[in-house]
Length: 168
Image (tube, rainbow, N blue to C red):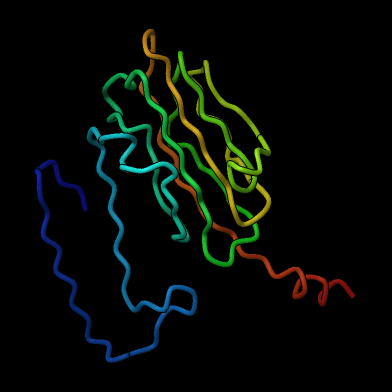
């Protein structure tokens, strides 16, 4: 579904009488949406924004057709439930005058994995080992050029015990 208005109404109907819930989230129905419009402070009011959803879209806060904002400092802590690694897929990355730093673990652990900046090329998917990943996005107070970034993260759950059982 796509809308260009300021609101959307969605009606969900199902003939199913199942009460079985998702084994990870415990929910029967999930809905997520993405808005390609300007967002205050990268879409969250606090640093770090702590996210435990299996997947989510993050942006620098600017829409895909406007310049990235100056003087931004945003942090996210991604900790998808039961994840053994996190994969980042970039829909866009176009930023000069700022950077996105990716850390394994929490920011307090200070384990820089990779830094991306000064480029108009979206990176290939990035797989970060471990169940917690922290992101830091920062731009200068002046001279920011580009349309920012949009990424989707996915928590990946792999049972190594299960894999090893099939190796023998």
